[in-house]
Image 1 (cartoon, rainbow, N blue to C red):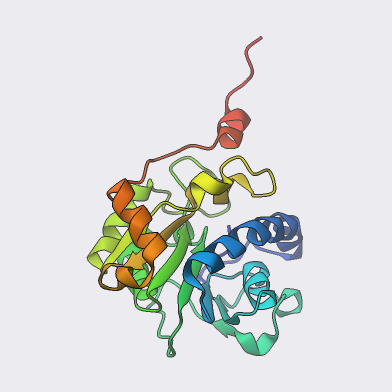
Image 2 (cartoon, rainbow, N blue to C red):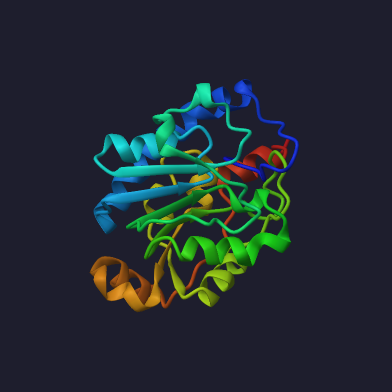
Length: 230
């Protein structure tokens, strides 16, 4: 829900960003402390940051941040200083210099065409040893969703880029009403397989689950689609 290729006509306007800001902030206020505890990142890059709601929460909690998104983002709506925002068309290689401890890309990948999926995953994997990631599942629905996929699709792309999944966020936030259901349903952590020993808790959780990630549909999404029995 955060981005689309900057080369596409943008349906996003101030009303859209206003509508999603409060839910994104409430969700970030729950999830960001969890990932900070697991990874303790100093530098965070948020790819597909929109107006920077999540980026802002990371910054408020002491991280050095950069937000990345397309030209369509209204600069007057940014929640981070404008010099912390980098404009990129996410359909193309990210072409970003610098080193980060954590990359973030939430509800972004589904807005990109399938032809960009492998390149996007490879680009994210090259930014940081740990990635906080979510993407819409099939029939989730949303504005300009071009590539809704089950988690296994993205897991395979990230495996080819050297990252393994750790399903350590969803169990904690699944029933938390402060978190928008799409984040509760889709949020995974990916870690560079060669660097997994740096993160003992993530390593333990990854080994305990044998890297399995279930395809899940959140009850709030299900309830919104299925009419109640009369």
